[in-house]
Image (cartoon, rainbow over all chains, first blue to last red; front, side):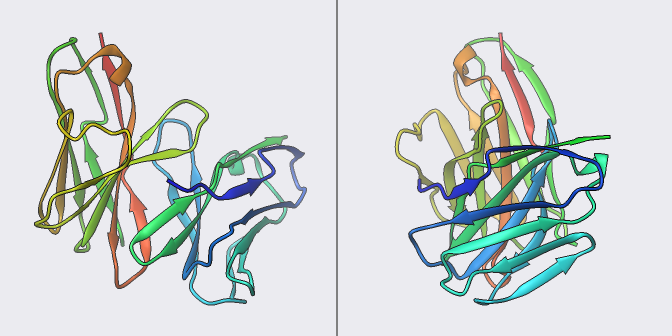
Length: 109
Length: 115
């Protein structure tokens, strides 16, 4: 199936730094979702976005649904070691979900 | 809320045997359940989509006779890997969606090793 363009592919940052990642698509979506996956576990939903332009926060995480409905970004502020993992975006249209290729985040204490 | 369980979490089986993996939505009714396969350091690969009471829709390249999916109720879907071979070894993850919410919730995954 279709995969979304997610960047960057990987990030190595110092603890305390802010992180930004984004997803783009050639298609319009009705919902954007952001997940975090720890090794050996299933992805966990972090933030769900339902309307173009919507900006939603969950603790240190902030995500936005792009105005064009073809993109979304996720920001993590003041990163901590437990932020380590792989972050996936997903776009939904109808009952179809399309996933990004993932961003691997490493936080250096 | 929105908890999805998956059982077993790990299974080791011999080549030629069949393995059944269960996926349950514990606190909501899942109109649709999805089954994914994930290789190390890669994204999720959708195998099939199942709606309660209907036959599953398989992605191109996924053998429906090898990966049997049953979605008998709004809270349970099963994936059976038939006549497993070592190349079927992988991390299998299910997810559940309630179309009204527009979100998808994942189970914890099942690590299958075929020897």
